[in-house]
Length: 488
Picture (tube, rainbow, N blue to C red):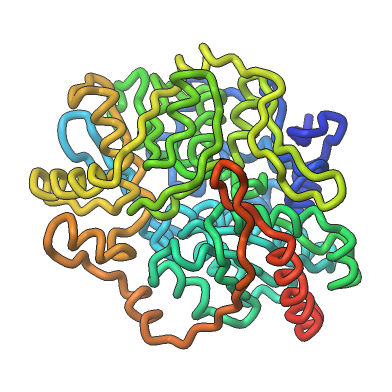
């Protein structure tokens, strides 16, 4: 039986995989998610059969029940072979010491783990559009790495335009250039505000059928490639299976340690655990935006103003995937919106409590301070000769905190970005520049094309930045001009 996907804000809306990909966001600003009881489960024999398989082969095993019959098996195998060509996007599990491993997810075209989900999403979306003759404008908000990965995956695809919103003062130059130097069908917007403002602009556009029709003639033209998209979420369930296939073959369970921002990796690993992957505890490291560990400790979820951190892709105060996580554990969370303007008035309202005790059994989470980022990078380099990026340092520190430096079960730290994307931070931590990937060197001299949202955001009574009406109108005017010029 095929799996159907419902809206986290409207259980009556049930769609196929194809519909979820093309729609992007569900009704009432909900996210598409499968019901927990519909998640397929692997036997121990099936898990053991993954050992030695390629990444693409493991991806097929993990994802086939979610995708087939919307994509026939033969076509899906070819999509995965292309998306996960090991010459283009290798993944390496490095043994460091004892039972500690690092999974390097940062060797793809944009040197970020986001390449894995973006390449899957781009090829699946292109498959559906090519089959139907339709076109889509993919709208993305990025805190750092998503924008470049999605842009690279969608670059020059004839049926797709890509609009990316990034916080102008909160990403590195190298992250920015991965979006702004491609040009062609990639349109990057620097936003006056933080990631949460960018995300609010994107979500409003995705739900604005009236504007989509006015700008393109098609009310369904806009879709998402953020981790709010099912097409970005599902492939993030693959790499914990890959990690397990490459570590100690006698391990009865293992510990993934995940640096987390918008919680796509976390949610993918939750799905993997539900599918039968033997995980002892999911370790979640966040930076000084610490809403999640405080929620686990107190049961009280409070959205606070985002603060800067060296792990720039994780500067997120209200993660989108938190809605999926809360629902997975039996709860419901939503953002209160103005009935007329649809702007968020109050984010993160939990009106049905999740099973917090079950969450505490499954997760361990800490906040890693800015200083601890640099201290951890320095310690790992001095002790093991390995250069972590700021995000990977959060994963390392979180694991260290959970195990107190000692663990009998294998533990895998997700290293999510190449340290060469953050040269200033690496030099501050260890006194030398990290090696710079060739692709980044090339982009450093290429011309950029940047659009701007110059209007000021609003600030609520808690000091949280919110999308202003002026920002939204400015975004719509500029997007309408772009899409009319390109008639796509």
